[in-house]
Image 1 (cartoon, rainbow, N blue to C red):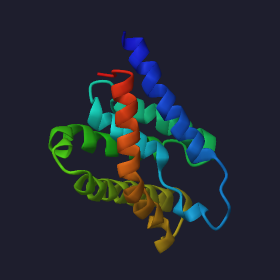
Image 2: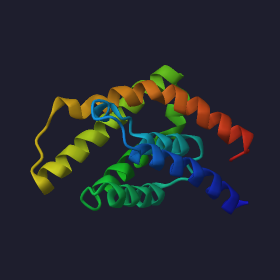
Image 3: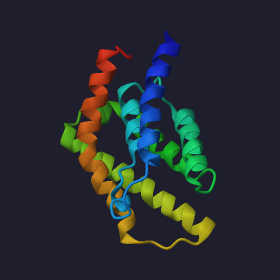
Length: 159
């Protein structure tokens, strides 16, 4: 049974990876939501015993390798965000969907600021306010992702 749950969760993470790596028109690229992190946060809230920090670390390494970013940047930032969400999953579950969206926006802000900080020290990147647009789009995508993945989880009885 455990491998079935793992496979079902891995399918959603795979689709999030595809969405994250899929090319977009240049003008829409700054607004791309962090699909992988949103899916990881959903699973860490819904079934925290199935998705842990190690999973976030491995998925972050895959994103690092696929996107060409410095190795370990996404791994570290994903792991920190999943740690925060998984350690507070009981509190976050009790919030309404819009309150969760605001919290998710805060977590996405943490992710982007940590990613900027690491990239600044590793590659000398400078801050651009456009860097935080995915926080806004991720906040507005959260209710849809939440409802879609909850329907998926209930349909396949992932516990």
